[in-house]
Length: 141
Image (cartoon, rainbow, N blue to C red; front, side):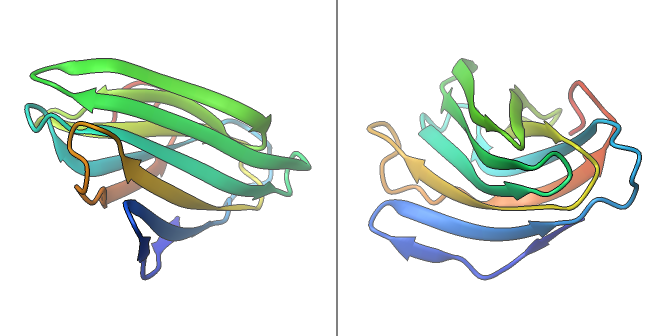
C-alpha cells in the first residue's frame, strides 16, 4: 500500500512522498492506480514524475505521465526512463477525473512523485485523491 506523506511546494512543482512495499514475493506484475483531483474540462496540462528504487528487480525508478484535461483526455503520454517502475497509462475515471497507472515487481520498492502543471492550468496543484494497488491492467477507477 501507499502511504501519503505531507507535501512540499516549490514554485509550480508539488512533491508528494509515497512509500510502497510489495506484500508478496512471487515477482508477479503489480499495478498501482492513482486518481488525481484534475477533472475533465478544467483545461489543465500536467506532468507527474516518479523517482525511486526497486529492490525487487534491482533497478532505479524514473518515469513520467503527461496529460491535458481538455473536454476529453487530450494527448496522454507516458515515458519510462529506468525499468524499476513503468508508467503504464493515463485514463479517465468513471466520474471524470484523470488517473495514472503504473506497474512494477511485487517486491520492495519506494518512490516519490513530483507533480507540476504546464502552460494551461499553470498554478493548479495536482493531488492524489485515491490510490489502489491491484492486478487491474485497465481502468480501475
